[in-house]
Length: 178
Image 1 (cartoon, rainbow, N blue to C red):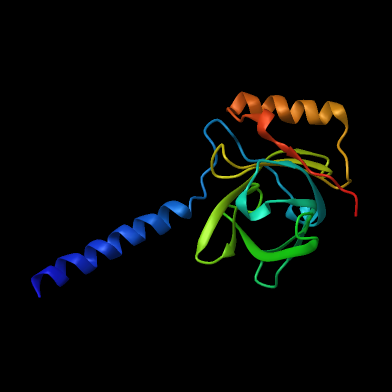
Image 2: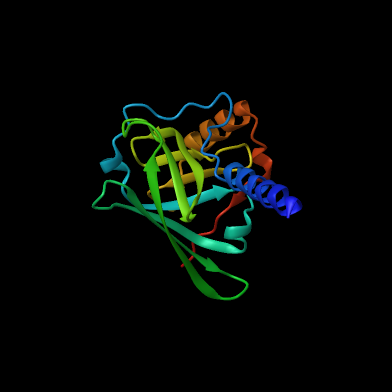
């Protein structure tokens, strides 16, 4: 009986720590989220231009993200991509919420509640091109309203990411053929 009283709380505590650590909504050291952010301008369709190789986006090209406002003020996220190995479209829906105030481009996003991850817009050019950092140096995206990004903006984003410690040579450049 005494062992159960110790074992069950210990297991619950370990599970709690694992869940808490997987729910990090931090921003990478040295990075700053865009200030004076206007969420309404950010809504709509974005093309994923580059990313690191994530398990949840494995073998996906033609990746897009659509953002729209929910009635409660949160943001609906619909990610879609074509799995070129399985030859099928995949789609996932999630929700994003601001970590602080809505004028700071620092959000947390969840596709599998209660697990949340950081989504930090760290550079934004005319609401047409965005550099987005996750909660660590393992997560980075370059997004665009178009299927391409001008070379000067790409170079600027890559330099800024490298200055933060990202290994940009490991980026996957997403094809948009469909």
